[in-house]
Each structure stands twice: as structure tokens, then as C-alpha cells.
Amino acid sequence: MTLIQLSEAKMNYINQTYTLKIERGQSIMISGENGSGKSTLIRLILGFIVPDQGKVLRKKVKISYLPEQVSLPPFIKVKAYLEGFAGVKKAMIDWELIEMFDLPLHKSIHELSKGNLQKLGIILTLMGDADLLIFDEPLTALDESMKDRFINHLVTLKEKGIGCVISSHEPSRFVSIIDEHIIL
Amino acid sequence: MTRIIFMHVFYGKRRIVYFSLFVLLMLSIFFMGYTHEPVYLQQLEKEYYLMYFILSLKTFYPFIFSITITMLLIDHDQNVFHMLYAYHSRFIIYFKKLFAYGLIMTHSLLFTFLIMHLFMISFTAYYAFDLSIVMFFLHLWCDGLILIILFLIIIKKEHINRGFLVLLLYFIFPMIKENMDSRFLFYIFPIYTMDLSNDLLVYAYKICYICFGILIGYVIHEKMSIY
Image (cartoon, rainbow over all chains, first blue to last red; front, side, top):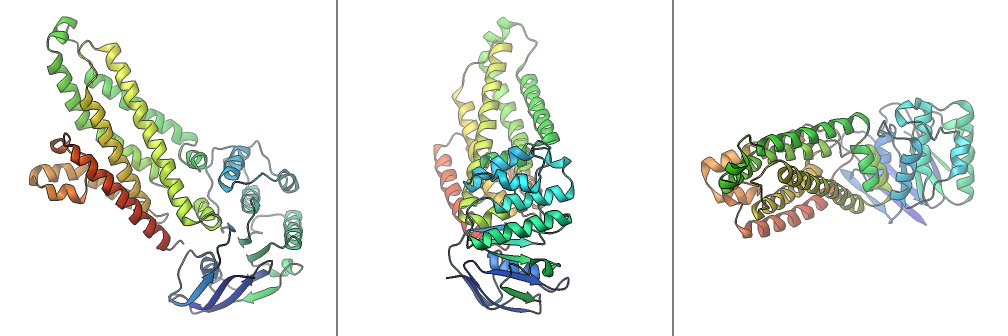
């Protein structure tokens, strides 16, 4: 089943035309040089921007999205924030995932390192029952073992039929899960 | 959603800023209402003292109130909410935001009203419950909703300064309206002004304005580009 379809979608400020079909359970990798239009493509998929030319067709889907930079309130405990976010998403907190990522729950968000902040962003994104996951540079600031754990988790999700769109400068790491690789 | 917004609004030092603002407001109200005159004189000239207090409150409080609303909403457009736009729909997040900020505003207004009432009853001999104060707070509640809707429409992550324009408008609008003495200005931006405060139709107009604002806000929210 096609979730989102981009037909000749184009923004005036970028010299790139996007034609893309995202099926349920399909994983797509987007890579390219800086300024090649990766984030623009992600925004088009998310419906955050409307194309100047062409069209985007989308089914009513739940998309979990991790932006390139997540801004979280600094003086809140990680656990409290996770609980609040779970409430908004009407989801349960996945404690196994938190254990896997080794996230310090009792620290305040401002005390977290860049890597731990990224892990928190990933956990917030993976929370809930999304139809599609979109990650913009998810491996930023993660150490090698965490990168592996994250990719292994994506493999598990793919087996469950949850697809993802990933924009990354390290496409070779995702070879095991991607069905389509778009190089911009 | 209210919990998440609460976390984003009242964290760490911000909590101290809000608390200080609230204490400052309470102290101002206290000094506005407090008088050194003997009790018998206060009771003899009850109406005069009460009128003076209400007049001071009506002149002073809308300014503090609008600053508080601006502080609350100045960074409402954060990318955490963008994450939620993608998960739920923009429609749901817009209304949840509206509800959450409305709830915070209503609570702060009610709390101010109660503390003020308590202060005045405890420390003055002339204060008596007056319906015009309730009407004034109702006006402010409507103004608060109008400001929240405007801020939700106007303020974007990359254009925070726009919030101060609305605040400036809220400050200077009553002055312009007073000088021009035109109802037409009120129809454009129906915020609290003393000359129209007793007209019940003003509430009806404000409610209609708020409903229309919510609708316009929703349409803009659906169409806006998010970067």
C-alpha cells in the first residue's frame, strides 16, 4: 500500500525534482552533499511544505519524525519528559529500548551530553505506533556501539513491517535495512 | 499536551521569572489598594476608595497581563511540536495548544483574582466584592484568548520578534482608540478599553471574534510551511 507519493514535486529554491513512492514497510535512504535538498525532501514527505510544482499525495498516516536538531526544555528530568511525551502520543514507554540505549533517566535534560540528547530524541521518535519513521541525521553524536544498536533496532522494526526514511551522511551503515537509496 | 507545554514554559529559571513577576504583581496590587487612612475614614468613604482601587487596577493590570501572555507564548513554535505535527495532525496539535495555553492563562487569572480578593479583604477596611471587578477579569480572559490566538498565528520559530509587535499594539491601541473615539477601531481589535467595559454586547462581539480567530488560526495552521 502506498503511503506517500511525490510526483514531479519541486521547490523553486532548489534545482531538484522529486518523484518518489513510499510503500508501507519500505525503508528509504536519502543521501547527498550538503545543500542537495535532503531536508527539503523530508519536509515534502512530512507535508511541512507544499511543492511549488508537482504534487504530493498522502494517506492519513502517523509519522514519527526526528528532526536534525531537537530542542527540549533544559531543566526537566528525562523520565518526566518521557512520561509527558508518552502521554501526548498516547503510547507506553519502551523501557527495554531505554535500557538498550543506556539513557540516564534521572538526569536533567541540560545535564545530558550531545549523544545522550540524540538518544533521547530517537527514543521519543520510536515511541508510539507510527506507520512510518523519518530520521534526519539520526547517527549524529552517537558512538559506534549505539549506532549499531540503533540500526539493529530498525531491522527489528522492519521485520514488524514498519518502514523508515533516513537521511544520513553514512548510508553504508544502513545497507541491511534499506530497500531504496536516493542519492541527491 | 498540557503537561508537555507546561514543561516547555515553566522550566528552571523561567519558573523563577514567572514567580517574581507574580510576586511583583501582587505587591503592586497590594500597594494600589492599601491606604494609611484610619479605618473609620475608609469605611466612611468606602465607595470613593473602592472606585479609586478599581480604576488603578483597570489601568495597570492589563499591561502586566499582556506581558505574561507574551512571555508564555513567545517560543510556542518549537521543533518538538513539529515532531508531533507529523505524528498527530496539525489540527489536533493546534487545538491542544490552544486549550493548554488557555488553561494556563485561565488559572493564572483566577489565581490573581483570588489572591487580590484575599489581600484586599485582609488589609483594607473599604473593600467589598464588586461585580465590575469580575466583569473586568472576564474582559481580560477574552483578551487573553485573543492574544493567544494571535500569537499562535503570528509567532514562528524564526520570527519570535513578531510577538512584541502584538504586545506593542495591545499597549498603544487603547490610547489611539481613546484619542480617536471610534468604535470602528474596536471592531478591528476588540481589546479591553474602559469606555466600552460596561456594554454586555462587547462580550458577545469578543466571543464571536475569538471563534472567528480560532477558525482563521486553524486554516493558517493547516497551510503554513514549517522549516
